[in-house]
Length: 155
Image (cartoon, rainbow, N blue to C red; front, side, top):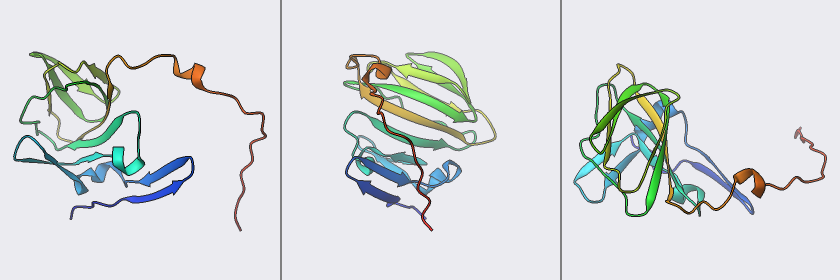
C-alpha cells in the first residue's frame, strides 16, 4: 500500500511531519518525469514541509538493487547522507564504495548513479540546493535568545 499523505502539523514558524520509520520507506514512490520509471522507497519532502531553500528526499534501495539510469542537474548540487547498508556510487565513470556514515557531494554536471551491493536495504537522505548559493557560515546566522528554556508538560 502506497502512503501519499504523511501526518503534518503547521504552525506560524514551523512545519512538522511524521513520515514513519525509515525502514518502511517503500510505502512511498516517485514517478521519474523524464522516464516511464516509478521509483519505490523515495519521498521528497519539499512540498510537505513548504521548504524554501532546498529539496530533501528520503530513499531506500532494496538489497542488490541499482538505480537503472544516470542523472545530473541543471542548477542543484546534491549531498547524499548514507545511514544504512553498503553500496557503490558512480560519478562521471568513477566508482567508489558507500556505507553508513558516507557523505557524498555532487556538482550539478556530475553524471551519477548508485547501487546496493549488500543483503540489506541501502537507506540514504539526499539534499539538493542551488550550487554556489551559500553565502556564509550557518553558525553566524544563529542568534542567541535571552530566555530561560522551559518544557510545559500538559496534564
